[in-house]
Length: 501
Ligand code: BGC
Image 1: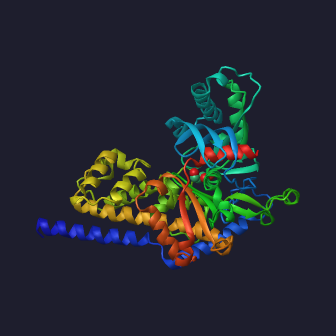
Image 2: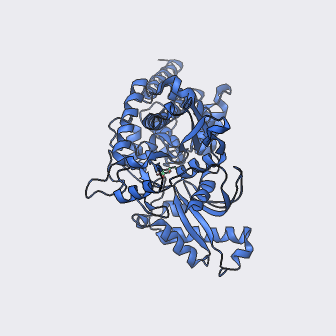
Image 3: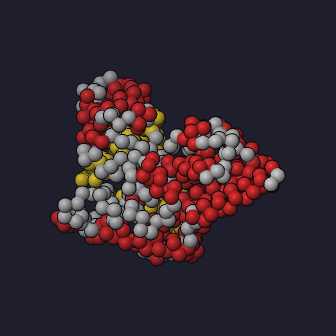
């Protein structure tokens, strides 16, 4: 066989193998129906009281469905100054929010990239993490509110809402114990502890006694509330607006969503708590579904060998958040990295490297390939995929041939498409469970979304729409769904929680 023939042969085999991998990433209409049904089942069992002896979040077949203790939706007329702290996937944000009472707000914001050692080092203690958060809060206060900072004994309290975007067993509006870390943290001594108490203690040690954490919330709840605040008019039919905020969700480093459930259905809340709420006129409570943990037993989730490897070999929380591991920004690049390494192992790609050991170091490093790189590859239409070549060189120091790049682009598109298709499952399931598409005139609904993937990944929202039309709500349902980007959810949402506290 001539060199050219050999080359052609390898290219054809690579293309065939890649097609078969892409095939494993497709989510069919039948699969969507099956997954949506199972999602509704998992929501329903998650609302039931925990089986005896079980602790929240350890059961795989039910969704955590965490009561948030937030029982109302803002309507845009709320007012006041609040502090908000937000520990999320990659950043710790401190902000002050002034709610102007007219659906607008003014925000002062300081973003801190979480130092690597807090994420990577297993020996880091809770105290070190929360001391870091308190220090950064001090820096914020000194910068933006110097008079308050220099008067720690002043009388007036500054109310703070704490957005903590990890699964928490919430015990009241202002307390909750960490169930487990997700998205990279691995500090074992935080698990089971009340995160508000841990933070408040460190704020006091830092001399920030005037700051009082009055509300603990998840970023999805914040997103939902801030979306309601900003679209205030949609709560009132009188305004002529017929769409209603129904879901708050995040598709970023992690993924999750919340919605309002009838208190009567939240059987896991003690009966006296339910009765008290209902007697005081409350009818609904926001539930943080923690849908990242949907189908941890993989009974129905589409699963490839790469998903199994990432979960078992590389993630910090094996066996948990398996839905998230197929969807969120933290994992999209890692899926591609695993596939490329596998194709190399099978002699189909990057044959200039004779063995695994010779591969560029960055390609061998878990989680080194970011979803941002995938977003460049996704839309590259340059000749010979030059943009892709540069992106891979820059991010992984990985040289590639045009044929290899063509295959890598196919893989990227299959990975992102599966992610976007899976996002339609919880959205469709919640809309069906709450019967939202058939309530009110026209049944138009709003889904407030936040997170880097939904906001910046090219074509992601339009793929979500395709998937919603294929889901059991069908094209008619899809037309009634308005996906809206809800910015600054965690800041404004935390302020709104602090206001009702
Ligand atoms: C966490 C959720 C959070 C989501 C989005 C997940 O990993 O478990 O609590 O809402 O990420 O940030």
